[in-house]
Image (cartoon, rainbow, N blue to C red; front, side, top):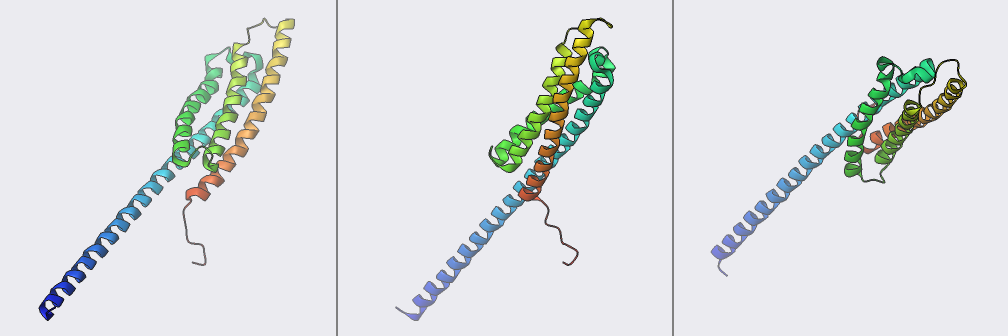
Length: 190
């Protein structure tokens, strides 16, 4: 083979290697950009989920406070019933996020499981309040009213237990979310 042919082959090989290297770098760059985009999206969904859990926390506390204050009369006035309606609205928001988190992480991931547990606890509280709402009204001073009041207190115990489970699940969600995609911030010694 002539020196000219060797030079052409060598130049072509270098050019192909350069093109291949640039292609691989570009591919890695696209992969990295996609990872950053996905991470930002996941972090946004987790931040939204944390905000919904925070609204749930307030709604649960307001509903429990109203139930304790009004007892049997909790649902006798539209204004008193407002915390129940807020709980229902926030619960619907949580249902949407529950599905999104299960798709992003898989149903067995710690983030999804913790959010599921918080959502289940909130639903248990909501169902106990719904049972109170369904209790037929009884006139004051009657035996039925006293029995109804005791039954409402029993439902309140269920709401308290659900609120405690919710709080634990909320903490588990925060820890799992931070572990999954928490920010890597410099410490004081960095």
